[in-house]
Image: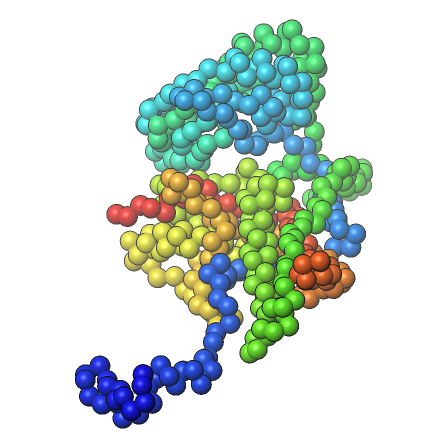
Length: 468
């Protein structure tokens, strides 16, 4: 612009004062700290009671339990054909801890695939049990007779479950309930005759079955623990029983897991661009936030110690109608004493809220650190976006009892590690390389332990996409 040239506004009038565009050259903008969408509420990390672990390992000692096998079975699907993984047959009671892969492979080949339509009766109450059913896909209801003679649903089985397994050990076994398909189901069946034919040729299997048949003769309580012999209600001078409490000879040990990354910052950035915010501090803050997000994800989903994979099969239940109803939440509560919290994906909480609305129920809320948290039966229901939602729009709801004193679920960490900035989280200076880049090693150590099986329960296959 030449000297004396008149500046005009957008409306064509002469400008009478300094414009904002020129004024900004002399101003300092007000800036926010770097934002990050990944940061969540992380209620699991906040509510989990943490126990310091010395030596990096936590051992859970329990009373001796006689396990008879009741785990989930995994299948392989090729097109419309489903096959059971041979080693997974070891989850059946008759084959618990049996490891001859050749024999298991022959048993797997003898499994026959069946497609069952919704409403079809798979097995009837009182009929002989001559087949074991492996449920590859679908939902099966266990139906019994109620106290007034009507049908009553005793439980719901879903993918990976099995039923009728007593057929492999007891030739006189009968069905104690009616198994009815609630949806279209794909099952694999293994007949007792096929099992016996393989057993006749395999000495190791025959010996194993004989040992398994002796397990029910052990005197145990309803949790499978070796019974403590007691006497009560007696008079006179009878012989008082002798007893002792037996322990597991090989208790489970939890080793601390690790999450790490190397943060790199150029010295020029750290030296020259530290006003008004310290670049190193902001880089570390965001890195630590990402590390904590990964930590919570691992506590939920890790196959070794994650909550979803460490819940016992008898503590997993299925919703009766697919959606998370108040009845299902009550069933989940009834499986354990002293439930301290529910953990669910926000979409599952919304689905539960819709069910409450249909029944005209309004959940109570409590204040937790300034947040209003919904409750059910007085137990808070915390959101956790780390619980996966499948492509079929199903998810899980977790219920937990917490703390060592209550034999609950605990978090594991080790405080006092070198260069610690938070308990069990450290930032260690690794030097400056030849490109003038500063390196920091950011490390978090953590794990989780379930002290007794009923401390953790899961409501599985919860539908979150149904609107009606």
